[in-house]
Length: 428
Image (cartoon, rainbow, N blue to C red; front, side, top):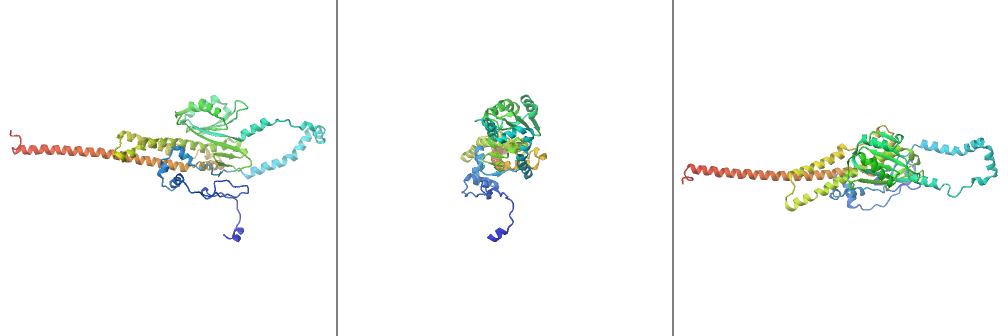
């Protein structure tokens, strides 16, 4: 494009392009996007691209659950929806007007004291003692950053029992019920411990915002495990960790598993709920990925045995059980679970909340991971169907040989009868 045409083109707002075309880094200070040098993709990255094109690779299907999660590009910069400019302008106008109106009101209320301070009669009264605001600064710093931890202690929660346990552990004013989630405002027992937010999703996931490890362990022990249906083993317990950061200088975004939000979102639990929906779905999907990986390990020796000896040391009943397990997991992901559904909360919530939820889903690559999971289901199903057909063919071949033997016996008996009629057999 020539320089003349470039200058005559009308300049519009900054529009983020699709991720494959731009760098994973955020815009720099002057708003320009920076492009990162490209490198040759490895076999795992090529497997993801083949998966997106409908051609699952063998390397990708053989990966474990943790390896599939590690394929997610964590350093990519995904912008999050921002608040309306009108709210920001109103806040700026209020701050700008505050210094002008404040002295007048103070003069009216405390005219003598204000006059004495202005003349410098008792200026030492304004001296700030060392360390006066250290506790306040530490509290603010603790509130600006924190951890987001998600647990999946069971397949689901007994909603009625969970409600009883929550009301026995927290005041009623701190609990709010949504169609498929309970929200709890967590108050710290002491000033040194942080407070936070808890979200209990019906499909067995707990999201903890701003709690430390001891508080999370107490919540899991006293609440989550008591209300969980079909609790998972400690080895199967799925745990995901993220971080949050409140800032008025950075644009809202998510990068390196850190969610950066505006300070105004700190007191809005619905913003955290919109984010937690996507994070909880990712954690639930990780549990299914782990279970499918275990099934892959359990059945990977079957094709090798068939290729080496031409036989499979499994009964038709065992193969039928494996096929049933694959179907149960596939149905849990695609039919019965809320992993793929847009939560009902967003039907009545503002569009900005759903946009926030969709951006987090984009960062977590939920659609791509579900495609990989379904591809692994397809491979497992195809392999087990092949083994079942092999068993059926082997059984059919045995029946055919039995029929052949019976026919041969019948022919011999008939031949002996014919020979007996002619007196060639049985005359002695």
